[in-house]
Image 1 (cartoon, rainbow, N blue to C red):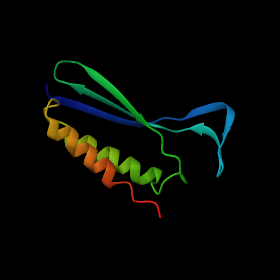
Image 2 (cartoon, rainbow, N blue to C red):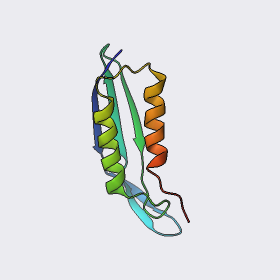
Image 3 (tube, helix red, strand yellow):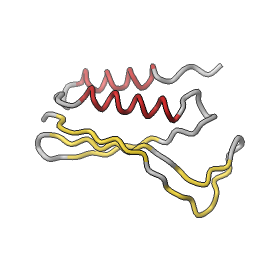
Image 4 (cartoon, one colour):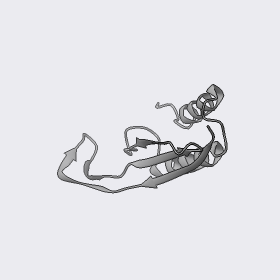
Length: 99
């Protein structure tokens, strides 16, 4: 089964009650949603919410990484373990260590 399409979106989900954290109060969640479709018509979804201040990640750099990885896996065989390992490597290496 070959990955034929990857769609990366960022959505805005307003909260009915603000979500208070130690560093900020969130009035909406803006997660990334990823949909991956294969050559057999199967689809899968994933999501990630980047909360500035919890890690050194930024929304912008995380968006860029999602888009780069989406382009990198189109046309690849989804059953290959090396593909999953490559995505995990990029994901881990994109997160700088906290000091």
